[in-house]
Image (cartoon, rainbow, N blue to C red):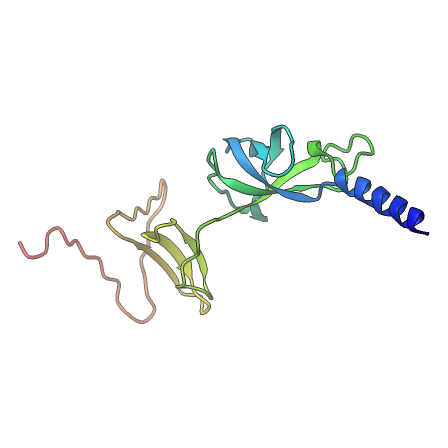
Length: 171
């Protein structure tokens, strides 16, 4: 009986060794137009994987593209079926896709219930709070609103629109 158990344990382990579902990798090169990256898997003794598609948050005509850089850590998944619909392979290295960045730094305690898009130093951020209020905040930087055609409208239903030039105050 123990020989059979040993056989099946070894068989299962061998099957699992060749199965790839997800792993951590490091960005070697990122093409922000083609949305492809060369990556180095961080687990196992695997070679670099080239031209890996990078997913982005997309809904309809809207998207958020992340500015990956060399050295960034990411999560890579290996699709059940070939991305190019060629062949019968499953969970192959050629069917890798980057689905997310990994952060080794703690996230800020503030805005835990809000949508937050921010620089890691929190000096520049866009916040949409749980009540729908939108805030754009920056320290020591300009906020530029640009329209190539049309107007930039600042309005309020009840309240004031304040535009302050601190450089000219007090002189």
